Length: 85
Length: 488
Image (tube, rainbow over all chains, first blue to last red; front, side, top):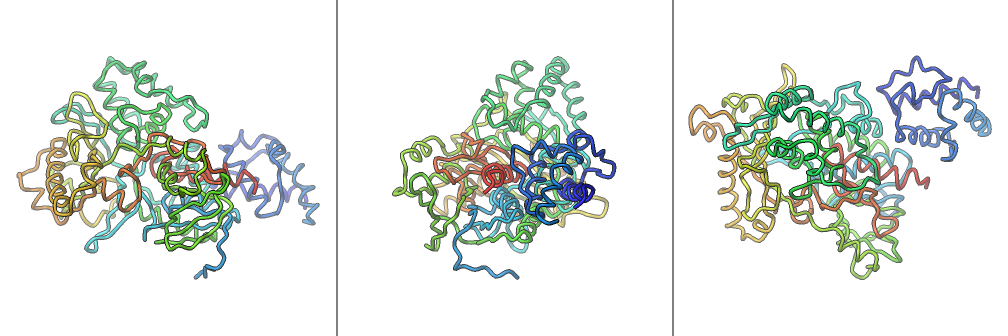
């Protein structure tokens, strides 16, 4: 999986958990939280949807790695690759 | 059609009660792959916000209005959070906004504050009628807006004390407390300030709405989501005992005598009610002290429902959606000595929501709620009970009409009436299992949902989030906090 595909996988999740947010112009290097109204419940959902849809586990200590789309791609792409995706 | 395998009796999570909290918790858990079953004693879902039919007419149990309404695009409020968490599109609830509501005080409602879903209306009403109080009122509202009401660790504080630091007119103070208390307070006379903030936001800063077809729309959406997520549900099958061994819920005994096991148990039936499910033989010393700690709520209610052959507005009653009234010098929110306390109450005219140009309820409805004494109602023999209902029905109607424009003729209401119904504290306990007819539960809330039993959690009214939206958020929060974020 490429980093762009990882970003798309995260965007797909955000589109489902926060359909009232406009995600078409998100800047990849800016914290998601600064561009959308996402609270801790929403972040928990991103983590749980990653587990449900892709079998990826994100330990709580690593939650800060999901701050922006770029950091999501850096952190999650090796995990997708390790799963053969 | 899903087939349910009744031979398989272990669940990841068993939920007691198919009300708003239980359904919301169930949706979250089933969505994330947990094997969940909801056990409900009654034949209809909805719990304290259910519905029923008499003579082909559908009635909502208690719904006047859903509080916490915000328009599309307003984010970070309870309604928005719950729509996201349950993956509900806001159009599915099809919420229609209130027209306007009032707080009316004095023997004939001489002091009146109108409010709508636009908070500036309420603020200007306060400024107009209480000019000396408006600066303090604005400071109070600023405090409420920034108060962290979902913090699980906030120090309890008297709401009366906080309000009196901002306002010194007892009339305005009581006019703020009356709606807030009637729509959710389990404590007499005063509230914990955090609870006041939750309710003030829900009623005044957010607002009122309802689906045209009432609470059953909301319940239908929840049931559909729960079924699609793979959740199981067993109706007319309550839990009569939670078997506890070494501080752990090891099994649930159902009303039919069968036993099921679950890794986690969420109870939405109330704190004292849940404590009573802990069988005597399975009491731990810890559980005993917990039981002693959660008093049954002292506050109960009665409600009259009058079905009309025309809209209430056609009786000259205007387009108020909700009217909170009180005739006395001070507003008393406490257990009453008489069967009903008709000095104060809440009028709801469900026709007066903005359903759109071509949509309206099939008949007129006029609902009145007053405080009532559980003790005075519960032990009446059947004939005396029916007689008391007839007597108090008339008294409540008489009291409430003082706060509405006069009828064209004295018998206009009687002539427009097609059917009536009334629930009492006894009805509440019969159909919901709430001890003492206490709709708002125990005055002692359990914010973190923990009990003396390590895998048993409370959700719903006694966890302390109030109203329909609050109950759903409570189920969501407890499922997230204790089970999903726990990673198991």
